[in-house]
Image 1 (cartoon, rainbow, N blue to C red):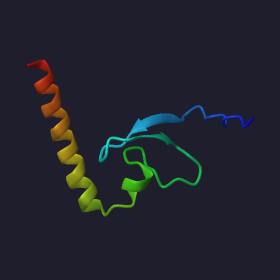
Image 2: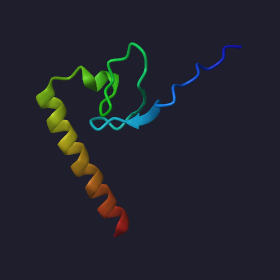
Image 3: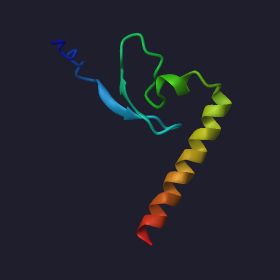
Length: 68
């Protein structure tokens, strides 16, 4: 039976601002940043910026719809 690796004290489960997926940060050898998962961190900066804005707008609209 394989044991789960012990997480560092600063390790947190984060949510990507671009795609909304959850990921562990920091993880050794991962390209993930505090705000973006490993797959979104590879995107060009201008795409990430645009997708982040659109994602925030969508989340805001979803919250408004839920309150109706």
